[in-house]
Length: 317
Image 1: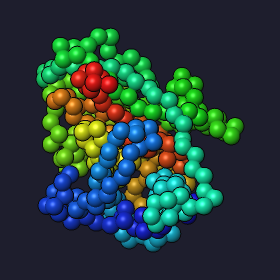
Image 2: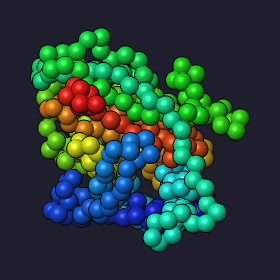
Image 3: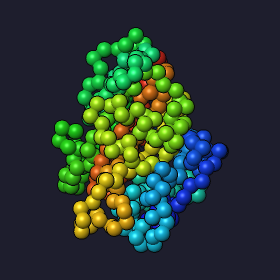
Image 4: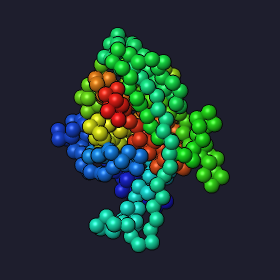
């Protein structure tokens, strides 16, 4: 895959405070873009905001700044690079006026919906209260709360097997594992959107209350924030964060031991969250480095398909 080295250099760059950033005073000003309806939701309208690479530790960042482009590429590009369809594929397929170039055929990725319900209401603000979770599509709650029911859903690629079979990519006879775990959750107590606005300051995983999830991976709380994005669909604002986790140590003499004082990333967590009716709902898609290299476009589509619908929205349908 052809990848611009600028992406790797951007990851190594230092970031100075900027008060104009809507997500955090410690993140550079955001670049705003607009997009049309998604393939899976023809009624959605999105205005998206993207956060540049940020959140790496100072030691990791300073070490990277001293390294050459080839070394940067060898460390990060195998893990965090995007597939070709995240490059200039748009210009390859479409004319400047948005029309499809002659001879080009675009195949829409097929998917199936995974949905569960959470109880509505204001929640329980008791300190230490655990979040309600649905792991890999399992039921999260048997009945609705005093505020009715809230539907949470996401889309899985049709080519993936079910979670019970390991999310195997069955396309073209590959049968390779595509993800480790997909968790959707509802935090216990009341929540405010401003908590997500501050995510890049306090830590995305902490802002989303990941530590209140049963059986969560503690290393996610120390992960580097690689990028963030905010978009509005059907009147609900969704916040997306890409986190990369590096092991605390590498085996001496192994290919992972770069002699730099830190190890390359070995796993990725893709997060999305929204506050609906005063409660926070989120999704976390977890994968390892090999799964990311093979199917990062599919993994990101799963995360970005996350939807939260209140009881009122469901009644209006």
